[in-house]
Image (tube, rainbow, N blue to C red; front, side, top):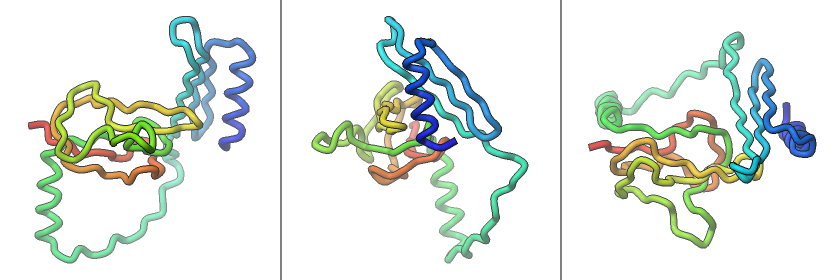
Length: 158
C-alpha cells in the first residue's frame, strides 16, 4: 500500500462519517480515527509489521579499527536509556524553522516533556519523553526520515 492509497483511504473515512476504521494486511496495520466532539481532530496510526518469512540480506560489517574502543563505547552507551521513534515519518528538532530546538544535548528532561516532532502524512506528532534524565546525545539529524523503533536520543537517567 503506497502513500497515495493511504491518503485516499483517510479522505474516504473522513467523508464517510465513521468514527474509526482499522485495516490490517500482511505487512501494514492502519487505524484511522476521525474527530469527535471530545478529540477535535483526525488521528491516523500506521504500523509496519516486520515480515518474518523474508530475512533481510546480511551485509558483512566492516572490521572495527580497535576492539578496545568499540567495547568501551558499548559499555558507555549501555548505561544510557534510548528514546526510540514510535512512528515512521520525518524527524524535526524544532516546532518551526524560526524557533529554537525543543531540547539540546545537556538539557534535563522530565516525563511528558516534548522532545521533537515527527511528521507523518502531513500530521505533526509531538514526541514526549517517557523517562527523566539528561540528554546525552541526539542520534538523528534534523529534517531526516526515521523508521519505527529507530533510536532518537540517549538519556542519562542518573
